[in-house]
Amino acid sequence: MDKHKKNPLYKSFGYAFDGIWTVVKKERNMKIHCLAVVVVIAAGCFFKLPLYKWCICFLLFGLILALEMVNTAVEAVVDLVTEEKKPLAKLAKDAAAGAVLIAAIMAVVIACLMFIPEIMEILK
Image (cartoon, rainbow, N blue to C red; front, side, top):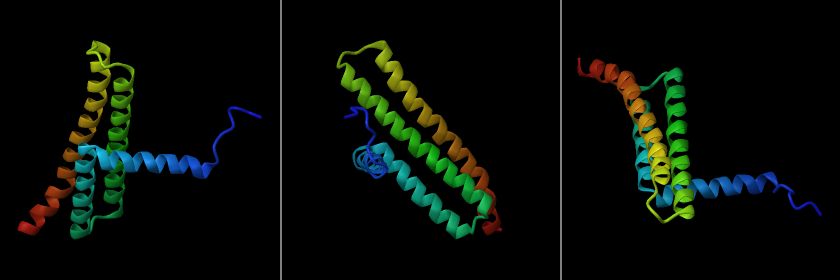
């Protein structure tokens, strides 16, 4: 029997959804990102965003949520490998967190560029 037989596709999806759900339940920053997604979706509905802006929003949602999950995975692996304070462990964790931060900052800038004109139009 082949030791390297792959799991059925449905099991792979199950593992992926388990990973998503676990990160959402356990990670504070993922909860914050999910709340931001809900707020942006509500704002987008209120302002009746055109399709191309929705595409940008969902692309950014996916990027940030995926990066947060990779960050969580990097932190878990580093913690699994060593409990000692090591410069390379710190670099791995800080770099992964920095990637999420860069994406989140860019998303906020893009959100401002998309929503401020809409808000200014309402205030007129």
